[in-house]
Structures are given as C-alpha cells and as structure tokens.
Image 1 (cartoon, rainbow, N blue to C red):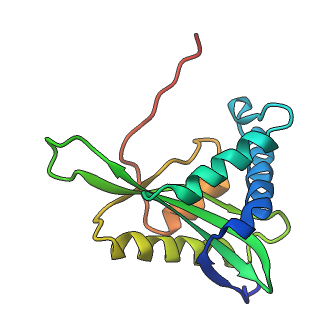
Image 2 (cartoon, one colour):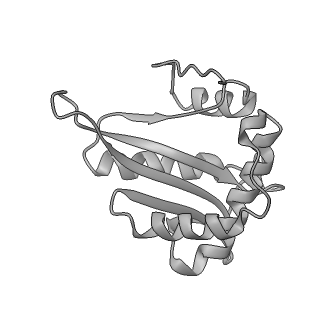
Length: 159
C-alpha cells in the first residue's frame, strides 16, 4: 500500500460531479457482488439530487479525500435517531465509504474511516453502525480490521 498524500475535508457543492462519479463507480463495483446492487440505466440525475439532499441534511456529513484538488474518496456519515424508549436514542452510521477505482489500497479508505469515526465521536455518539454486503469480502475485512463486528443479521427474501 503506497502512502496517501491528500487530506480529508468536508464535501462542498463544488464536489457534486466527483461525488456522483464515485457513487456510480461504487454501484458498478457492488453490482458484481450481488445483482440487487445493479443501478438503473442513467442513474446520474437521481444521484445528483440525492447528493444535493445529503449535502443539505443536518444529520448527514459527507467527507471527501482530496488529493491535489481531486476527490478520490467519500465517506457519508449520519446520525440515526432511534426509539425514544431506548437508552441510546442516537447512533452514528457510516452510510457509505467509497474510494475511486485505481486509488484503492493507498490508505485513502482508512483515512476516511478514521476521520469519520472522529467526527461521530466528536458529536458525542458512543456507537457506530454500518452495513456491508455479506458477499463483499474486501469490505468485510476492511471494517473488521478497524474493530467492527457482528451485531445484527439482516435477512432478506425475494417475493
């Protein structure tokens, strides 16, 4: 793994094109893991609106890895609000972490994950959850190496 030489910073509106491109790459990558991840034809318009909404959402933070003005990765963080009857009513969520093709295994994902965890801890959250497809062997290994473990199984059935 070669050392990354950029920095993690908050995403800005000017990053919209790069963010959409990263999410399309992520969709293409995940489509090879499970057919349910396949995107519709021409997903760009919907993704643009989704990214705009995420940038405006007070419970969501998008952090990007910027190297010489190029956005090479993104980490989407959320504060999820649980049931009021629970002791823990808010939990941090890493909703997505994507690194550009050709830039993986350079420490970019690790830098984004560490910055994301620090951001969520700084908000006073005590727990972070994320979802990784069971067939995503690389993703499973990445998150487990950072101390994440099993908590809840999500089962699905096609109708």
